Image (cartoon, rainbow over all chains, first blue to last red; front, side, top):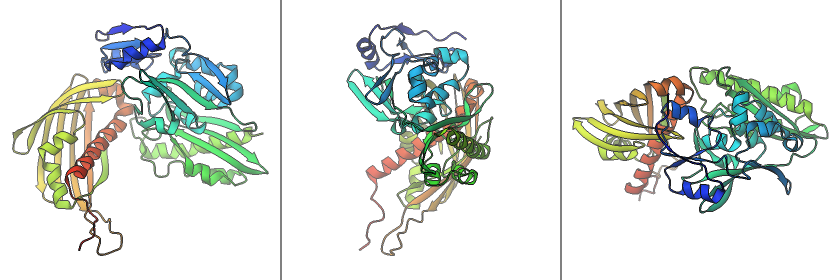
Amino acid sequence: MIPQNFEYSAPSNLTEALALLAGGNAKVLAGGMSLIPLMKLRLAAPEHLVDLSRVPDLKAIREDAGSILIGAMATHYDIESSPLIRSKCPLLTEAALHIGDVQVRNMGTIGGSLAHADPAADYPASLLALEAQVKIASAKGERTVGMEEFLVDAMTTVLEAGEIVREVIVPVEASGTGVAYQKMVHPASGFAIVGTAVRLRRSGGKVAFVRAGITGLAGKAFRATAVEKLLVGTAGSAADIQKAAAAAADGIDANSDLHASAAYRRQMAKVYTARALMQALSRCA
Amino acid sequence: MKVTGSFTLPVERKRAYELLQDPDVLARCMPGAETFTKIGPDEYEMKMKMVISAVQGLFAGKVRIADQKPPGQFRLLVEASGKVGFMKGDGVLSLVPANTSTGLSILASEGTDVRFEGEVQVGGTIASVGQRLLDNTAKIVIKKFFDKLTEIVGETEQPVGQLIP
């Protein structure tokens, strides 16, 4: 279907873009991989689109003071193919490789994906495990929020009218960390039915550090702190992993839809969490 | 799609029941409600604008309250349709005094658990392409409703759990 009429602006700098968005009626167009289909189905009918693709510097991926800074308009392909990200925060490379298909990865952006906040998106699980931060910009200024705070609910973030995701800030990975992202893929959409991202380190024969994020299971991706606590301090045996992974869905109000019931999702969350923990442990130095 | 859940309101059961039947309160709590007019006994007409992420839709519909058994139970029937699809809901709300007792008998424990159990049908474009997100959307709408109701209760009601002289 053809979208409803809308006004289109393609500002050439960020100040101009933010001024256009400050009006309140405009919607940001990033990669358009979620927004354009919604417009074509006429489920979304924004009056005004502000295309950020001509704003310079929003695509940059660089390192600064112990962090990797990723511009909001960096595509999933930019991220999966960035040597800097592969060497400094490899979990994000893995997350990007899992997104949708080649076409979506060529166009879709990290900022667009985060702002859209699909409950089954791939990035949030990894960004939670990475303890990343999101830099938000508006005509009034900038603010930075932690990934956990950024996600409010399904399709809902802390972004207010006139605000955009400007940059994602990921701490450089400590050496010896093993990372893994294990995802049960919905075959048609490529979205995660469930997906678990894990980072962990060993020290003196014991698991010394664990961070786990789970997507697809609930309204928003979340840090699986119960899993983390159960695994830290253990030897990381197969039994320890099973015991920790069994807590993956504890206290979670699981999603239920045509593709997977809540009970099935909870069970798969445990299975995929165990796989991610095992793979990450095998990759530890 | 089945919808179940419960929320706790910080007022006693009789008051909670009254609030949930009050059209002014319902109008303020219904997310995105633009109009909410009485068209018959226990029957209301409403227009609402739903905005979830990039998706937004205008819906027009009816809300009916039936099978009232004050102060413990009533049935809520909702029907709405718009360009992007239609929605039909039928649920029973049960009000149970919440056990918020702190163990001290001099503390009043007057909260009320509102439990709901119902069936929601969604059709049209929104259901055929948004199936994956319907469950979450329903949860968000219900949560917003009770959050707002709790807020209204906080503005107008006496706090409970206070010391009884």
